[in-house]
Length: 404
Image (cartoon, rainbow, N blue to C red; front, top):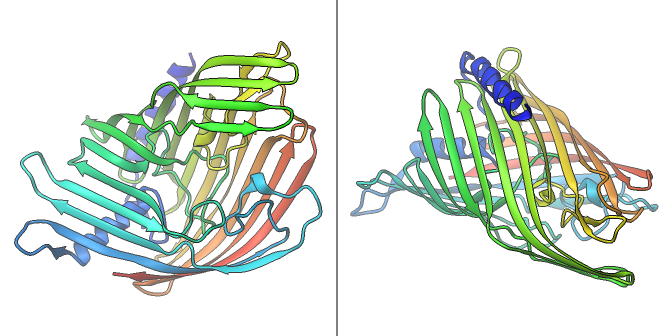
């Protein structure tokens, strides 16, 4: 019944999106399909050709400076993005800083072949999520036509076309977001329909050593993901599914436990027309042992111990709703909220996180063909298993200059 309802919702929302007008240009996007669309436009506008070949390419990117003022300094080394899971529960000092880590480099090329256009893509910035400033390769892949892609890019389980444009680098806690190595096949049918399936790097190796718990997790096979998407002139709807297979072992003072874990998840997402040129972005996702696919995971392993001492799967669920308001061709606001929460399966420590809530509102302005400026207010609240909550907020001002 749930699958039938999800399929009906997918069909109905797609029908609504297919009869809308052209979407407003997301000129401020820094990731997801909106950013890829802009990159392809830049390729056409500033195309170069490798001498003696038919290969067209584009090299560009942008310099970005972020000014950040935060009510409480976050726990851990990372301070340049708003991570609700690192909200301090103890008294903390205010924090302010300047950062250029979002600055991005892009390469895009297209080579005609008998099998179709062969695309290569490289994207890098200075923003590994560990507080350091060093080169981070976010995407590096080869794509043959519209049917096959291999390399590091956005997971098939996530919806790269439903990501809200936030100045904050990480973005909403409860949205699915993952870039990893994969091989994906795609098949288009009907009017705007696409079905895709992939084999993906599970990134499941995890070890936690402590006085109370010694936990080890590893993958038994690659993650398997699939999705069906319907795209209209001004919106889309996507239904995605994920399958994982892990092996976990745990040791505590009360004994040892070992288990093969079969995790799975499902996500329904889309972008739908709002008033005028506005857009509604939404996603709902839920599953067991899929915590790392969320933007701000609350459970690194997706496992806990049940009252009998056995390992139990933990359900992670997230919901995200954002509204993109196009005030004028060069003015835009993106506002919304997102929540991520953990189920009650198993026994977790009282100080473990149970829920994270993230909200943001911004105002973005394109100063010219190459310059964008904006301001954003963010708020977040983290809640523990014990029921204790802690909040944080920040103001971020950003300036981006495109180089191509």
